[in-house]
Length: 555
Ligand code: HEM
Image 1 (tube, protein in one colour):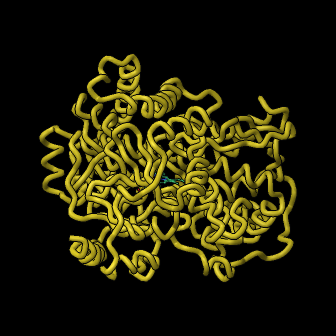
Image 2 (cartoon, rainbow, N blue to C red; image 1 turned 180 degrees about the vertical axis):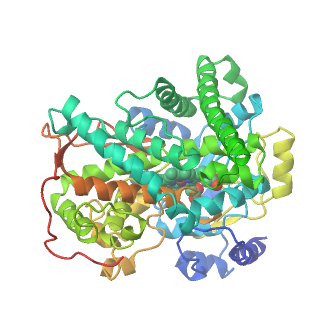
């Protein structure tokens, strides 16, 4: 059986190579990366260890860590502490659920390379239950099995192919221009001419406006002085839904209808779908009018989805709503941390400024082609993502029993564990089919065996030709995930972050809050600032820059 699973592992990898779906950039390395212990297991002379042999805290101990020792909001730190105690592989119990925590780059790679054709992050029963209640369709985040694969094959090209993504640059740049002006307005009205308070909140509006422009070619008024009521309500509903999600999941599904916050959860989703529905129907009407007038139909992402006729309108609505949700917190959070680091590291900021003005001197606004000449900017974003890597998104349930899974889903008995094709080998352990893995990317990103001086912000470590880069493990930091279930919005997020950061740093010098606050991260699905990030923005306009030295390093 064990040998069979290894054989499957090899066969499946070959099959996936031919799969044709867009994959993330990490190269498909081979078995050589499996460490010595795995190789020994594979030698078949060693009896593999099982889940029973694996150490880890009991349920009570976990509760103690979370609520007595106080790691509930800093579970990323708990990963590091547990790794010190148990090593890179341990199990933890949450009531009846057992998680296998995987906290080294080697082991993370092993798990990810064995994922099936239809990986599942987590069942998300609360999100799925809402959709069943309202007869809404699942999107890329919530769908599973062959149906998920179909959705991704439709959504992928216009989100991941560089030529399509770079066509969104002009649209994004308009939002960037508005954000720059909004910063000026915020400084004048609330910041004594220099401060911008609660940057994450402001960047949230930027990211929401950005994704709406790309998806719908519609502006939501987030950059207006007064944000429209409907947009504020949408933003509030997203917050409510994310706030209530981790609470609901602690209770059995059968109790949800009786819980007071279930109603709030449903109301939040209702509002999100209502707004998305209005936008989709508005776009359909616009297309009909254009057809009547014989006008060019090319345009927003949504236009393409509607015209391609590959999905029903309900399916499009399910996917679009999930894209809106997935693409806002992630991007805005990353840019907030990036600016925070720029303020704390003036030399790095200066180097970035010099790079930007050497590529885009004078009034030239950076466009996608310019970004390819800004390796330092890319390295800064890459380092920010390592520093603030998301933690909770990567719960992997290995599965591959497509037919049975589909049957389970359609018969409505979702609580049963799903069948899988293969066991999973990690180190000298073998795990049964439906094991739930928690990939501890935070612990890997701060592993000093992989990243020298991991607690220091060093963008240079991501530059090509730098010695450290060649030594880095490709799974030390995988901020957009890996494989066919990796982030759908990666390219768009990168474009948004590059265009905004280059222009912000070209326009403003960012300095720390004179009140001098160190902002700590806490876990809220993402690694968020525990307190607001407030920064000074000093206007550079008026200065005529001359690059001090060319900073064309290559990434
Ligand atoms: C800095 C920004 C972002 C980061 C760090 C990020 C990170 C991630 C990660 C780690 C995953 C899970 C991948 C895996 O399981 O292997 C993911 C999934 C996903 N992301 Fe992003 N993301 C970002 C921005 C975006 C944007 C802008 C969009 C929308 C346009 C988006 C849409 C999605 C979707 C739909 C999924 C689910 C894919 C699936 O399950 O098939 N993300 N993202």
